Length: 266
Image (tube, rainbow, N blue to C red):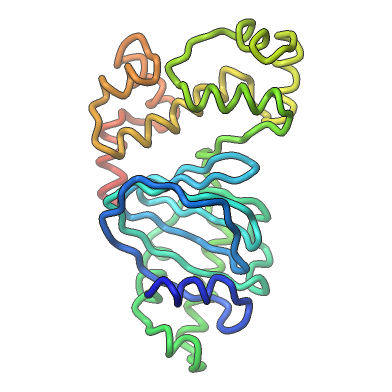
């Protein structure tokens, strides 16, 4: 699908309620400018790593996960290549019952089969012809999207200016091991205020948030093929085994086995 066609479809609420496409290629790590679309978008990643950033936080899309971006939500997108993905644009009128905030969901074999089939249909046919078979498959696809399990690959961002400054610094410097007292002094508040407000605005403790931020950065670096030892050192872990233990608690497997399992679609 050409870029001009993609742009036209994203910015139009008219036409078919769902339009699927395939995206493939070697894409250097880059980040788009802040933008939004008239249509919502589900983006299923087969290969590569995608990071969506919104005002609510960052959302990680490792292989075999799908991300949902509701219509009209401001966001940026970072893509680490090589990349292979499928997406579906959903008109606002068809988005009822879908989450009102961005999220990451798990997908099953039925979802994958339908979206891959739908991506083979020509755009001209989808936009100009009424076809009962396509309409039935799209209805099933929407059902699968509505019942897809939401996964904890979300990094919520606080709204308070001081807390956001701390969060951004932690995210950009995952090796920084300063404690809460030091972060509170740096932000110009007491440690009690930092702890209370951080949990209030993110539903996470500072320690939990920092671990999730490190996990986000770790997944990004692992997707580039960096060794576990290098990633662990860059994230501030004393030993690779400490990083592996954190990764295993979050994903139920070691980094190597997790990435192999995701690549195989298991």
